[in-house]
Length: 411
Image 1: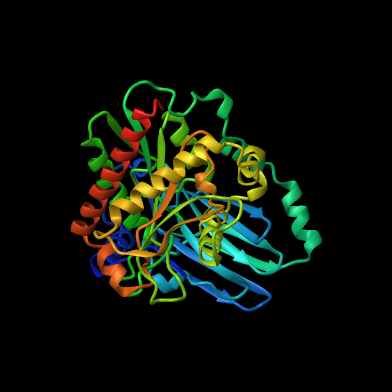
Image 2 (image 1 turned 90 degrees about the horizontal axis):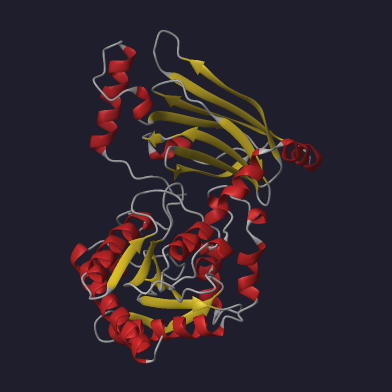
């Protein structure tokens, strides 16, 4: 189970803040509309038939409840919220096999409750604490039949609007790489917001923080190159769907997309960097498992794959964009070549699988696994700023070689 990191100082600050609220002390802060909600405590109780979720907030929260199938999920959408409760307070139990929470986008947060059987919310209300200025959100859920769950799905209208907002519109965008200006590289920091990604074996550092820190260093290294401009798909801790990441790269007219990750494996002795390109068939079982996990990012945030544009799904089957695929392979080979002797590589470091973030039809794209957080030696390197800067410089060197080869070939 993955949770946002908390520290002793932060918990102490939260405790002081709540104490002040409860005693009615004037809190000198920004206006309520300009600061996030604070969720400072939570508890979950129940059995295999029904479960209650209670979350304490510093002020009254507006919320909405939605349902998503495959798997069965209850989504609780909130305004921007700082989740500062203890890590184990919102742990999965009862009918919920998994509970995740975090930022979805600017001004939006989400709690995703995943169950193995159909569930429905029987009660969802906000209650004010007696004699205090704090509020609690109470959600009671229970198992239901498939028919009842489907009825809840059919009553919803929100999904159509959300799906429309996530759709790509490639025909309305400039062709990627069509600009005659600098060579544009889209640097994609994997995961973010509600999707923490993997967790370190020792430090408990979450993948989304490592990828963002590294992406910023890589962008700096790329921007130092001549005739090159780097853009970040995300520059803060926010959730982006996989199709949004592809769209953002295309909207910038990107000539290359580099998606950065640091996953975990069951085999803790495996370590080293890997470069992936897209393919409808995985090169090996390890690549297949990693692609499957990375492609679940949307589901973690409560996005139904049914709402994914048909064009995106088709790309994994129809790899007719042979020129783009060939360029992607060239980039991967340059990265491996530059890493050799400088960065530890996994056995057979260039692999391929059906990663959905690599599906831009006209943007050469690679996914880089910097190493594995499940391995303690890799983990030490992944959180080391000096190592990050060194590897970012090597990737920039590989990109420069690739760019020059494209220019020399008239690309």
